[in-house]
Every structure is written in C-alpha cells, then in structure tokens.
Image (cartoon, rainbow over all chains, first blue to last red; front, side, top):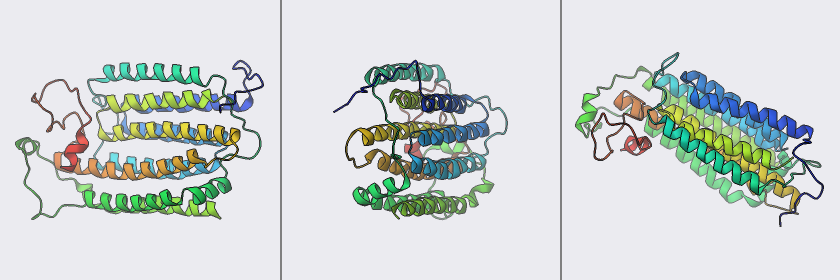
Length: 229
Length: 125
C-alpha cells in the first residue's frame, strides 16, 4: 500500500525542487513566526501576506497549480484585505502596541514547542523514506482538478455554495447596526461600566464586507467553473 | 521530493499558528493565527494528494478537493469572525479577548488570564 522509494533518495543529495522548496519554506516559516510575534498589528497582516504567498509557491512546486492560484486569489487577495479592514475598523494602534501578547505567552510557547517537537518527530519517523514522484503530468492542473471536482465532488460543492450564502447573510446580519428600539438592554452590569465609544466606521463596514464576500464567492465559482471547461 | 519536507513544514506552521492563538491578545491577530493553522492543513492535504495521485492508479483527488473546500470555508470563517469581532468592539469598545470574561466562572477581574478562547460564545449572546 505504501510503496517505498525503490531508488535510494538521500537527504544529503537533494534535488533542485527540494532545495527550492526548502528555501521558500524557510521564508514562509520565518514570515509566519514574525506574524505571530510582532507587536505592530498592521505589520502582522503584511507578514501574513508573505507567508501565504510563500505557501502558494510551495503549491506550485508540488505541481498543484490550481490550488496555488486559488490561494493567491482568495487568501492574499481577499482574506488579508478583510483582516486589514478589521484592524482599521477596530482602531488598531499604529506602531508598537505593548500589550499585543497576553500574559500566558510563555505557557503558549511551551505548548507550541512541545507540539512542534512531537509532530516533527512523528512525521519524520513515519515518512522518512516516502518519495513524491513529481515527474510527468501535473497532479493538480486545472483540468485534472476540475474534472475530479465535478465528477466526484459535485454534491459537496453545491453544499459549499449554500454555506457561502449562509455566511454572507450571517455576516450582514451580525454587522448591521441594531435598531435603537430593538436593542436589548445590557444583560450584565459589567458591560455598562465599560462605556462603549461610538464607532464611526461601523456604518460602513456591512457594505464593505458584503462587497468582499461577493467578490470572494464570485472569483471562486468562476475559477472553478473555468476549471470544469 | 521527499514527503517529509512538506509534512515538516506544515507541522511547523501549525504550531506557529497554535502559539499565535494561545498567546495573542487582539482578536484579529487570533484570527490571523487561525488562518495560519488552516493553511498548514491545506499544505498537508495537497502534499499527500500529490503523493497518492502519483502512486495509486486513480484517486478521487480528494486532497485537492478538500483543500478547495477548506479555502472556501476559511473565507466564510474570516467573514463571520470579523463580523463577530466588530460587533464585540461596537458593544464593548475593545477587541481584547483577555478582557471579555463575562462567562468566566469563579474569579472576578484582576486574576491572571488563563483562558482566552471563549470570546466567541459571549459575542453571539
């Protein structure tokens, strides 16, 4: 079931694809580390762009072209823009914010390092000799992906469009400004003490989010229908 | 290519996202870390799908199809999550998840923050 590599593929003589994968992987991992550790909130979003773009390059190196372009379109194109809109609308401080990390960051660091050590050990031990043959036709070209998606995965695909519709409606309902007479009184006393400043931008963002969601859905469905052709 | 390279990279990215979720204080930064974790899962799915589609005779390309579904669900998740964060910010004036402790049991404010993951539950309330 798991045909091991017949020819000896050593780790000490990497191929060109492996070297490229390793270098881009280092850039991606470094950008991810900066994303979770920087104290400047907007810089975190911009380093996230680097990490996600690096992952798109990794998909290309794994010959999954369609996934790579979907990654560029949806993650780099719209998710990061949405995150930047979120930072802007919650009035994130420009520059260094001293309280970006909570007090339990050392516990979190211990948990993450332990999880990383365990996962890397298990993964390396399990797949040390497994070899991906990248020669031949691309494993994830648009034709292959579209054919398999619309032959075998039609029902989940349609269910996914229903889910996107539900998310669209839910985002609009959640971010709409509540009417004054239907606004419930604050449930607990603690919420009253933290007086909420009126957000000036809150009237804008339903439109923004609706536009963003529409473009996301449209680009994805268009690109996937293009894949079917 | 050795399968170990993408697998190790995805494990490291996942743990980076895990650290971000646990250690960050701003809710939007937590959402960014969740995106990192989802991307690590996507890389794993794609790598194993490429491996299996080259070794097995015909597959359903389930890894790549599930990656597409994960990307779409992540887009929906980021939309809903940001709407929740903005609603919380409008009501409370903060998006600091260490200060959203209304459903915490036992202790009052001022105790060291030890749980920071329940902002979503009270945001929808």
